[in-house]
Length: 361
Image (cartoon, rainbow, N blue to C red):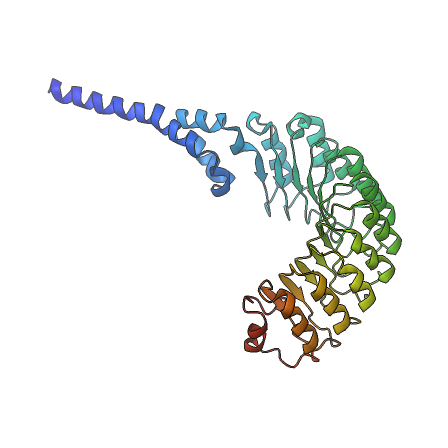
């Protein structure tokens, strides 16, 4: 009987050592990959497994550098509660995309109560948080001096004032998404141009108050741009489009709906020789001449949409095949009635690596 009890004690001791020492050691080894595979809910659940595991997880700072309340209810209060916890004192990424119940008052409270927790924040996503105004933007950005990526897509309450405050508070932004912020004008864009010469990515989709003057000023000063999205902005003219040639590092350009873009403007754009993705959907003034200039100069092109352009013919595709046949993987020529040989089989003969034949539905 005593021998059995001793064996039991030994086994229990082994279990205790396994839980106290082995499990935490293993967790330390895999902690660096956990943020990629585990949700916040899963991480919180793991904290409750054992005291040893709890201590191990809390000691791994990279696990607590990201907070996401994406599409969540009561997100404003939940964010404040999370940032009040010691484990989120060095958070680097916050995602509130389409989160509900996030208002200016929450962001003001964060500034008052959690200011120190955001000093290392590098990425902030407020996409679709439509109850936030310039007041909230000023409050939250004043806490984030290290911010590099900022996205406020689809917010019509944010104006030039909010953008100016962002620029004043956050000196290191390289990726800015103000898509759908319809109250931002040339004045706001001027702040961006004058303060972010190292800007790499900018999304101006549907920022309808921006004119040629605002865009030109930006293109003269933000020469590091690699990605520029001008989707659904039909008022720009060649006067502005020609300045895109200043962007030597440009790889992604979306000009969908650029109704005033001509072949001459496109020939200037073709001087951005590193272009890999170009969306010319509904650029109705473009003809073979413009596309051929792209074909001859932008030999790294992988993505091209000519959707809805009636002025292009098989001639431009033949020219494209001479320089980009082995690189283009996405090509949309639907609605291009001047292109006669546009069946899947015929396109594959010109571009054997094509994987996607339709960008727009």
